Length: 107
Image 1 (cartoon, rainbow, N blue to C red):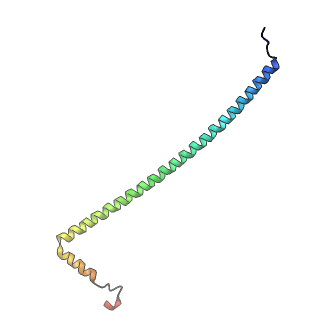
Image 2 (cartoon, rainbow, N blue to C red; image 1 turned 135 degrees about the vertical axis):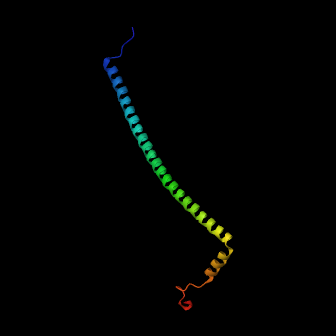
């Protein structure tokens, strides 16, 4: 006949296993909590980067629009100078004239 362990031995073994399982569950909960904190931190960082990217993109679009406007103005001025060569001569002459506001001797 097989000998049965005493009931208090079974209770002690079950208690030890139960205690070990509870410790494991607590460690797993701590690990899950830590992982959640890391994921939340990563989500916040990604959201911050997305917001910065949007601001940077908006600035790039504004700069691009200004450059396009400047390009059109330059093309218009260049077209006017090509059409009216005498205007070009007048502009060159005006550029070499002294500024009477800055130089009172030429007033």
